[in-house]
Length: 340
Image 1 (cartoon, rainbow, N blue to C red):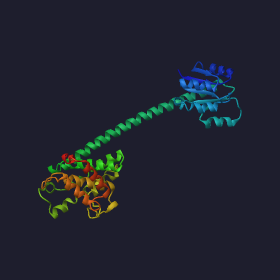
Image 2: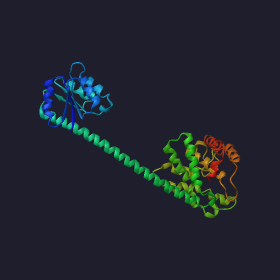
Image 3: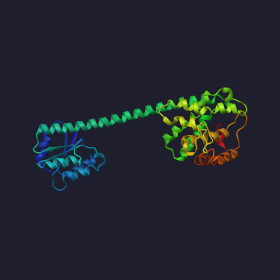
Image 4: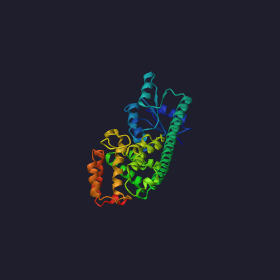
């Protein structure tokens, strides 16, 4: 049954209200603000009927203190008064009261106002619960969609890498290194996940490069290299159709740009190159040097470190090159290479 706390110093008024409401609600009656607070510290009613003018602690002060009780912050309060001053009603509502009832009481008015406020708060609580449930469902759906999207992207990137047995797993490793660099640079978890996806797709343009060139068991000729240099533009064109993640093509498009402006396809320089592409460029170069190729074995760690150190400010963004150097220095067993 719905519980109501009635607070009024006038015993006659309390009795009158009890008689009006007792058939509909469970009534708890006290005669002062102090008694009300003692009650509220032990029990939480569905509604408080609170007289404004009481000796000692008045209704407004009682209201202020009851709101400081953690369990009573949302309990609706209807103020009661026999004062004819219209400003009293305004003050009651501005204070945070849910409604205002004047004395002498009209039974039907009391019943209607009490019923309306209780129902309103029940609907509000129900709505809040529904919002929480729906929000949780949306989050779960988003997680499932993101998981499915990641699986699709991983499958697609794996298909591209499989065009050459020596680069199998390349996109996954570049994505992993890129995410670690981004994490150390201060990216949020969501941003780290985004750069992981961008890293997985950075070589998607190789789908438009003939297999025989990708699998060439020697260094490429100038003509062959000119063909493979088209893969960033092809990749950007493919990914430009994904409008839900506008920067997803940045890694594919510009991961072969150089910090000194001598890269391709657009010759961008410095911070003209999107940040995600500057991160992926370092990760891509690291994986290229630490992976076996048809024409050479992976390079010693000291050589890899030296190449990245020498490329700071020319091939690589110095900030992201330094982060990769820290990762190399921490990898005393050269275990990152063993992932290849």
